[in-house]
Image (cartoon, rainbow, N blue to C red; front, side, top):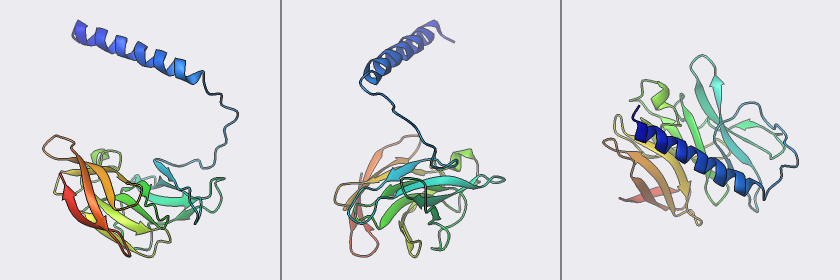
Length: 193
């Protein structure tokens, strides 16, 4: 490894540790409680309708397939929400709440996938974006990726009219914004590239 690269890595690591150490003195962890033993990315909805945590977790240890679940903040009432709405099975996850508290946007492995680690929701390659109701009754694909392209980490704006996510296009990850239009399931109106 090149000496300049190694020195840069060491300096960067030390700087990150010092910054993290300095800011951590402002907070003290009082206690921790395990509320689920399985889980990946999560999204916590705080609103008038409910207070639920949505998260993805491995559901098939052999294939490493994942699904999306909701639960109460104390870990009770765990419920799978990607089982009955017609969402393809495989890697499913990266939930983000719509501000209405009734819908989530999620990544779903598509038919171009070889079901490798790069197709996992943490990479997003050959993943489409879907909107799903939290009661698992309705789902719709809102953004379809081309083969070997990716959609990753979708999030809504405050009023739910836009979603932002990263796309993989020709080895680049541009941040993409999509306009959505109500009612019912939020739909992509246009892509702003």
